[in-house]
Length: 391
Ligand SMILES: Cc1ncc(COP(=O)(O)O)c(C=O)c1O
Image 1 (spheres, rainbow, N blue to C red):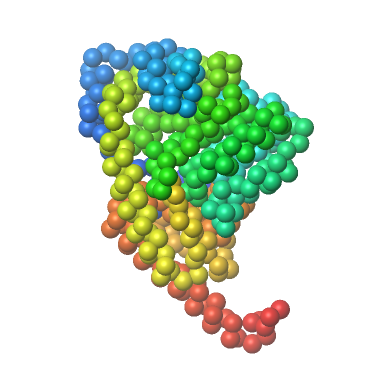
Image 2: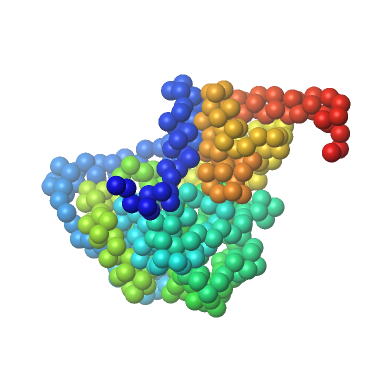
């Protein structure tokens, strides 16, 4: 009775870990800020509900909110207006509507590996083939242009990019963005740029793909910016031509985005986003704490994230990511296995620092003990005769 396409996708490995966890576990698997939305934004939500904003709104979102979002992108392209913006139910629906609007059955879509868990499944649900391009630790998880270009065929329709990245924390330098735009122009590809962490960077501000090419479709979200993941509100910024296609699919998925949530984020966008900046400063302090802890964890290597709120360390003992994540779960720590993000995530764990400093210290102590056991077992194994010879 179930359609074949259902067999093409799985529920993400991230959610499975939570289902297996004990309530007392320390949770470093979180994909959301551990803050509340700013108080005035919460107040605007409740006032909206009390004052009757409980009904359907326009499919593309409230005109005032689309105008305000367009303003945020005007420094990149002065002509950006409401006709470039559709408000969606989070980045998730924005990605899904984009996939269904841009990918035909049989198309190839380039996706990062490791990369966020929705890109490949959305391509498959649209009948397209996700083609992973590698992100290397040694490159700070910034893609090499030749690795992308060598995977382009006549069937390639789009390239999905994500900076700042979940799960790696990688942030693209401007030169990479410009080079990706050039190959998209040369090979007639759409660029689907997931920029949901654009306000959470540590060294340099994130650079948007907007305004560099009419092929760019920007996916963004209020989930992380306002620590409001449960409100389910995001948006797409694109050329009117692409947006009218994406908006059609959006209508069929959603009818319209949540009316009170739009009223609330509109209030949030009236301010100077200082609450978001404060949150990003705290994430930076936690990132530094996490990186200091990793210096003393044996058998693990951790690249410094430049944005988002994840580290993506690699371990060098013999175990799969899922085995390590399950072993840690038994020891009371929730992490996310790196292979949930693609085959290149094997031997990595994703650790979120959207958790209190206290829980980070306690959680990383569990990780340290686990790593010590694994690495000491390995060095003991080396001394055990034939099995430990160079073969
Ligand atoms: C890279 C990335 N894109 C998109 C999303 C979707 O976010 P939402 O649907 O809450 O806006 C997430 C959520 O974790 C994410 O990490």
